[in-house]
Image 1 (cartoon, rainbow, N blue to C red):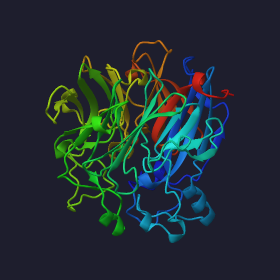
Image 2 (image 1 turned 30 degrees about the vertical axis):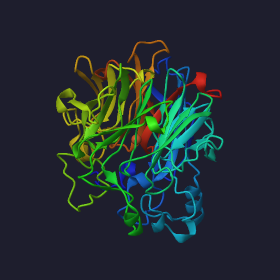
Image 3 (image 1 turned 180 degrees about the vertical axis):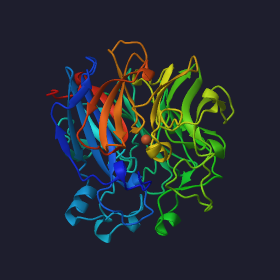
Image 4 (image 1 turned 120 degrees about the vertical axis):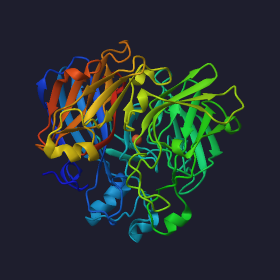
Amino acid sequence: MTSSSSDSDFFAPMRFEAEVLDCEVEGSLPAALQGAFYRSCADRRFAPLYADDTPYNSDGAVDQFRFYDGHVDFLSRYVRTERFLAERKAHRALFGRYRNRSTSDPSVRHLSHNTANTTPIVHGGMLFSMKEESLPTRMDPSTLDTLGEWNFSGKITAKTFTAHPKLDPFTGELIAFSYEAKGDCSDDIAVYVIDKNAAVTNEIWFKVPVVSSMHDMAITDRHVILPTTGMVTSPERLQRGELHWAYDPTVPAHVAIVPRNGKAKDVRWFHGTPDQAMLVHTTNAWSEGNKVILEAPVAAENFHPYFPRVDGLPNDPARYVPTMRRWTFDLDSNSDGWQEEILFGGMKVTSFTRIDDRYLTRKNRYSFMMTSDPSLPVNREFADTLAVRVSNAWYRFDHLSGSIDKFSAGDSYGVSEPQFVPRSPAAPEGDGYLIGVVNDFRTLRSELVVVDAMNLAAGAVARVKLPFRLHMQVHGWWVPWSVLPFQAR
Ligand SMILES: [Fe+2]
């Protein structure tokens, strides 16, 4: 039987790095796959100092799959953060509860608490592994050697940097923001525009109505969209030695809309309701005239089971599952509210939503998601695991027809977030492959599967079989060889 403990099977500590040359491939890898797929993973190498800590507080590791001419090589490395190096020296955990420096061993409280465990991004020829409480950690995109925290040649003065900056596919600009930008509990937001050569070209500072977890953002060709959430913090919480976040069901959603090249005076705040305040990831956004359209999964309550409610009540499972929503902000109106439509009949989904990234900033027809689907074949032995702890399906949503195309890797497999790779730079939207790591709970081994993105139901066209299990992924990133500064082999 599979244990439901959070430190078993694929969640168990790895303490493992690997290189595999010419991975075993079942089927044949499409010629379109010419590039590198990076994954940022979370792996707790040592038992946590506090039993109620969250998996979000685990060490970062980055995996790299190099695809070339029908072959693939694999490499994985931990991110050598200050925290990793200190705990490596001590051979035990030294860092305390999630984002609460006062709970760490006194010997390390002055060090960066960055885990670099959330999102890998390549920009300006540099690879970063990102964690929102800290600056990006720069890594060598070829060897995965850690090069250290990166402040864009001194131009990023904020202490934090989102793990979900947006890369504009048309201009090559990286748009980013920082919250708690002057340190724990600060109500300061910074927005940065970074050009394709990694030079900062605009910086805007302003105040937020509520200090909350702001995990993701969205951009259109003209605007930056920044939603707050109901996950709040306070100096008192931190002084009491608690986890950084708790969910407050009375806190409404606030959304800042900022012109990309504007100033602080141009920031416009819109205000919603508490049951709109759990937006973790955005799907996409675009402009229609002077309207800004944002699509995202949004939950009505605490989406993060690892964090408590401020009122001490249990989380309500009926309300913390997201639905896909479209929010329309009319910049010509004096109203400080927005219009909401619930998409796909209010279907219960997850927050792991992606698109064909070439359509970022313009209206997309398709979106992709990892989610749980008990209607797909599920081996009874792993049913609880696949239904509750991990996802077992990839979906392609057709936002025009309303139809859904589904992929299952097998009845004992969990899936990681899917990554879309276009068949060619000029291929129509969605014409290409979904790739990503799937985990077989029967064998405790991992595979990377390649699926025709327009025909998920047909199953994998190729499976890259690894002779071991991989770390649990948070997010992934695809980069074609044309933008990487090294050779595939
Ligand atoms: Fe995320």
